[in-house]
Length: 319
Image 1 (cartoon, rainbow, N blue to C red):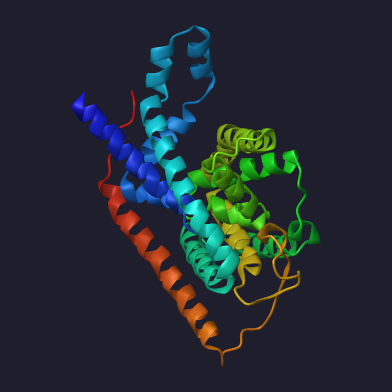
Image 2: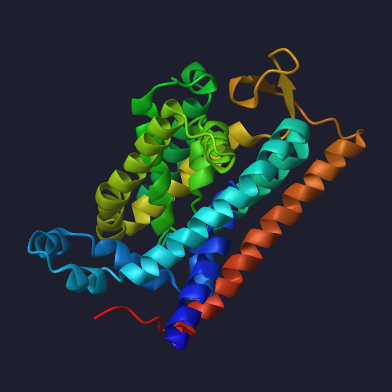
C-alpha cells in the first residue's frame, strides 16, 4: 500500500507541474508530461474513455472499468493539475493587470518557441505543407483581429466552445490551451472563475459557468481530440504545418507593444488594445525583447529535455 501511495503522490506532483504550465500561455502541459515520462500513459488513459468503458459501467463492472481507464492515475493527475492551475491563477491576474508589456513579451517568446517546435514536427516541407502554413498564418492573423474577438460574446455556448477547443491542446505537445483561451478572449474570464471558486464564491452563476466550461472540456477531450489524432495519423504533414501557421499568425494578439484604447481601470477582459511599433530608445522595450528571447530559449530547452527523455521512457500503461 505504501508504494501505491508514493506512486499517487508522484502522479499528483506531475499534475501540479502540468497545471502550472497549462495556465501560462505558450507552455504546453503535454510537453511537461513528456518531460516527466507520463505522456503516453496519459494519452492511453484518455483514449480508453470509449464505448467499451460505457459497456462495463452499464454492466456495473465498476472495478474493471476503473482499472481499464487507469482511474487512480487519472484522479491523482487531475487533482495535481487543478492545484497547479489554481495556485497560479492569482499571479497571472496580477501580471496582466499591472505588468502587461513584460508579461506579453514572455508569452510572445513562449509561443514563438512553440511554433518552432511544431514546425520541426512537419516531416516534409513541400508545396502542400508550405501552402498550409501560409493559410494558417493568414487565417489566424485575420481571426484574432476580428472585432468580435476583441469583445467576445459573454454567453454559455461560447464558454462551452472555448473549453472544447482549449482542452485539445493537451494531446499536442507544443500547443498551449491557455494560449487558445487567450486568443479566444476568454483567458481572463476562465482564470477569474478559478479564483472565484478558490475564494469560496459558489454562486449559481459561477457554478453554472464552471460546469459549462468543464462540459466543453470533456466534450473536446472525448470527441474533437479523436479527430486531431486521426488527422495526425493520416495527414500529419499538412496538419502540423497548419498548426504552425495558426500559432504564428496568432502572435498578432500577443504583440507586447500596445496602446490601450479603453479608459484606465477597465477590467482586463474588457480592455481593447492596438498594436504599435516598439520604441527602441526605451529601456522597457529592450527589457521586453530580452524577455521574449529568454522565453523562446526556455521553451526550446524544455523540448530538448523532453526529446532526450522520450526514447528512454517506457511508461506503464494499464493492461
